[in-house]
Length: 180
Length: 105
Image (cartoon, rainbow over all chains, first blue to last red; front, side, top):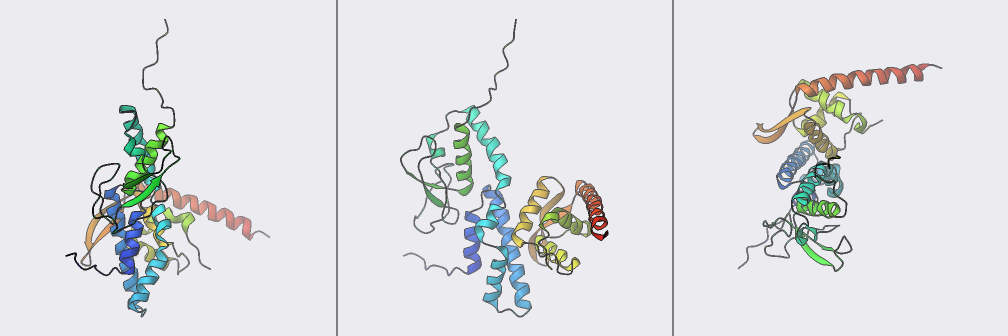
């Protein structure tokens, strides 16, 4: 027997959508999500204390924070540099990167509750329903046929970075030849 | 008139942290209070700004219990203090220059 579904409030739904769109490492995502949750609760409580009814206070707090996509995008740039460097190291050490890391795509949309359990197509770790997003990739690099992918958001960004790296020439790490 | 304060976000955050360590919500409220409500910082942009300042070692942060709740509390570092002094000076020069031009008929 499946347990009854817990009701999800607007703040929980918002935080899930926000977290799913964060292009940061899982550890950083947990921190950002916790800070956002604290903030939203503080704002809602302050509004409630000033006389705004509970649910309206919650909604106004969310409105002030902005739409989850825009709010999450503001954190994106911090990952890029690190992912880029990590991806570059991976490509240098082990070219070509396994095909699975490039089977990751754009416009992710979390589709929670559809799959009972899954592992990330990039890192192989378990993806919880809250962090999971599923997408279809085609027309990027050597991927011509659409491929369905399940991955963590951070892994997805890593996959994209690796894909981009594979498309660019790498600077040689070999020592320059000596002239005689 | 209200302003998003985004152009001077770093200066505002560092200046408030100079007085005491604080977490995000308190920083936003303090900036609003000190500016008499003029600076309404877009709330979701404050956290990425704090994280970037932390990445530049201008602020530090840690989880701490404040009023019975676990909070991410930010503190100004020595480098942050120096950066704040520089930004203040740059802002004074800028404000003075605007004033000199604007006040001259």
